[in-house]
Length: 479
Image 1 (tube, one colour):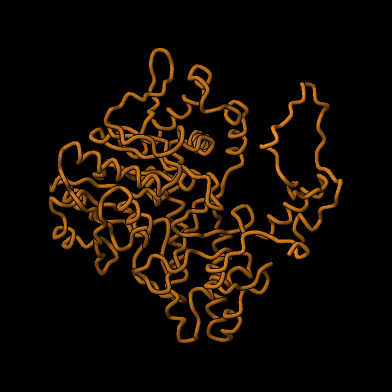
Image 2: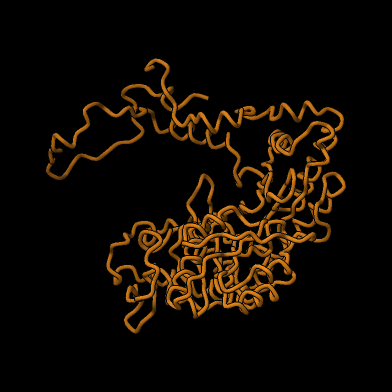
């Protein structure tokens, strides 16, 4: 496929501008470019066709099944896009006065109330722009909490199955991560927790259900052990899809939880963004929330900066506002009862896939999973096949691969999350393709080793691709 520069022809335009009706201002010489910007010159039909064709070369949730475990690539309802484009939302400026942004502030305040109710916690910030920033915000609040109490605790416990951002957030927040191992069932080793949890440990970061898709059955005992030693417990909310309407983190003893609005509440987050990672906390931590906090007064909604114990800002202005609008739309449409249906469908879909494939791929932990499950391709090693080969072969069938090689505690891992919005027909096709790939691994492994065969770009040398990035197109004639 040609690049947009290759279809460019001098003099073509994809726009027309009205006659200038204001005085022309001369741009100061020192602000002018020394040479013309090399921009493509194409017509409107060429622009549309080029980018539509380009988008169809990539895989996305509107095109096909995207069972990316842990990242939750959920279908994004188009009504979310409609509301986020309302002029009153899309065209406001964050420096406008509160009087002129009451609708936006009301939406954010109401969304905060909904989120607090979902997790049964007391206070919230919508400011963090992603899940990892939500983690950082929560653990920074832990730091502020202990500093206020003049307690010099050094460590945060992080399970060995945690998301990779967890230990990074601990370090950035001024603590040191301490690994908490899993037991033979893939859950937190409670005996080890009792051994490690002392007055030097500030708390525990826990993903529940964990990255194996397993619910921590002893969660109330876990939070109790930490609290008994004066510590705090944080819930990595990346897997909230499994808990909505079924149980609330606040009821389980968590002191803080972050939401991934871009995962749990169906807003797009491909290509690295945008995202939104609100953090809800107990009353004990509320004083440390980032500023400003949106509060409601007799005069309307206001931005409250008068919070002397705040950790300060973690993001410019008030958060990724249009992602917040999308999540608000989704919650208003789905309703309180709909939340439970989301989790029930996600759990059913995941178990249907895992138990349909457990005889074709290795299942490291028996029993039922939650919204995602983990299989392993290690049984294919005898045919010279790796999990990566399975992932590449799936592309030939128009299916995106699950997360591979994570969690790290499972060899040749395949983490599969089908999400609540997928039909049984889609799941059955994925299962059939996975079974076919299993058969190919045994009978004709070279098909997998050379896959994909039907994609615009064939298999890359992944080591070379990481070390020698090609991030822009260069006209051969300009070299």
